[in-house]
Amino acid sequence: MARKKREEESGGNWMDTYGDMVTLLLTFFIVLYSFSTVEEEKWADIVRAFNNRGANKVDQIVLTVAEEGKEPAYNDGATNEIDSLFEIIQAYIEENGLEDDITISKSEENEEILGPVDSNIFMEIQDRISFRPDTSILTEGSYEVLDFLGGAIKGVDDKVLCVVIQGHTASFEASEVDSRMLSAERASVISNYFEEKFEISPKKFVPIGWANLFPVGDNENEEGRAKNRRVEISIISKDSYIGKNKELLQIMGIELGDEGYVSQGPKPKDAES
Image (cartoon, rainbow, N blue to C red; front, top):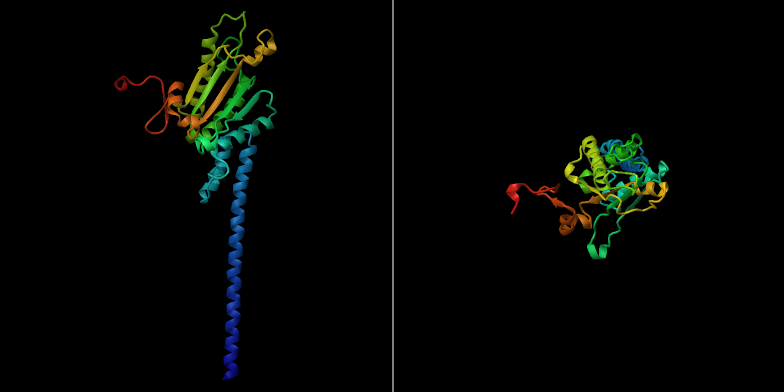
């Protein structure tokens, strides 16, 4: 009887060992699955950073990750959506060799003074967005960059307070066109294109025409005039210092609505004092 009891105890120990092994295997597979999920997120980051077909294509990949219960690559960690947008645009410029035509920078906010706030993105674009002489008609070669920027802005639409589009012209004695009107029309054409093609609210665009008041080149020669014919685009984040400065927004002609969107232009008559 004693021998039979020992055999039963031995079989029980074997089952315990087997159960422990199965538990360890299950834990091992859970760890492997977590690794594979991290790789998906890294892959989304890589595709977004090196994508040259606009942000719309990237968003489809990011949404696939999100459907599996994971947050998109844009998060509250070391980077935010506006900083990610900056990296996307910068990568596009480098991949397409546009460094001489498009310069990009972002504001560096002082967190000790202002607290944690988002950056804003500033771009100066020459040649890649251009118009027919003395008109506000875009040249055919302008649409590639416009399509990329429009898709990229659309991808972070909920984080963007406004997009300021500034048109600049050259000073040329042979031209009989009002440069102030022309630069304003060119800025408006760009904002209208973003609005219509990418369905971005027109309330988010602030087109401004500066005529030839701020030259960056010598108007006495064609090379300098070509530099002066430029477009500047500023993407202002809702969570930036500018986005939170009501006085500055009023000066810019921007007013935050009750729902958080941007409204521009004159107030309705029933709202006037």
